[in-house]
Image (tube, rainbow, N blue to C red; front, side, top):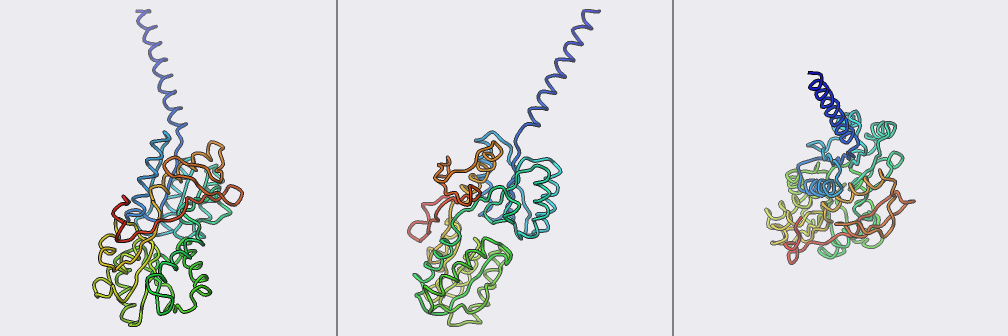
Length: 330
């Protein structure tokens, strides 16, 4: 009996040790949160694929979560909950940078690494900023595409996503500043028109623009649903030959509109690569590695690094035309 009891006690100790070791290993697992402006649209769905794949490749836990509408208040609530769970890093694409500053400061005080990605947050609260592109070069490029399609004179409009989205505003501001000197013959008929990241709203707002400004020659769509909604309206009205729509759209979604010319050109980057890069940079930072200019990131390519190794630029965009869009898989 004594021998049986001794064996039993040894087994209990062994199992307790094994359980404790497993718990310690689980507690040591790196957890990185990637939060988009919203979930459920193709752009951020593709980003999710890249982020989760990076987690698998690196052997870390990646939580990809965000609100179902572009709502900063909802992002704050979700971030509060994630902070309480003790995650290691948070990478967020803010719907309103200022609105997120207090909660991101709280995250930093809790020892959580804070990044922004896709859309910049308050620079004072982020450890790293992951940009898909050089904002100035991109804004100017979009306006060059517009002029190539509609000419350098005439009326045009801008249909954007959310009015508080810092990345969208940056591209628009750079494009407008560039147009003042490069294309003085362009006439912006009204202030940028918001569509709240919804194709249906962009479609309806474009119908309103067509009715209000019959001399409209061009539309710039900024945010991935905006050019599609604008092109849908132009397509419906049979105005593809009269109104040139260009903008920041995914090639797979753009196909039906590129085929008939209701969307002349889409321009973007691979959002899956952006999600992948964000997780890699967050994990590197947690391991004491700072990004380097010209660094070759697996499955992404060579990156640019600015601002004392705090701003990462993924790279230039691709332009999607009727002739080439089908060759892209995102």
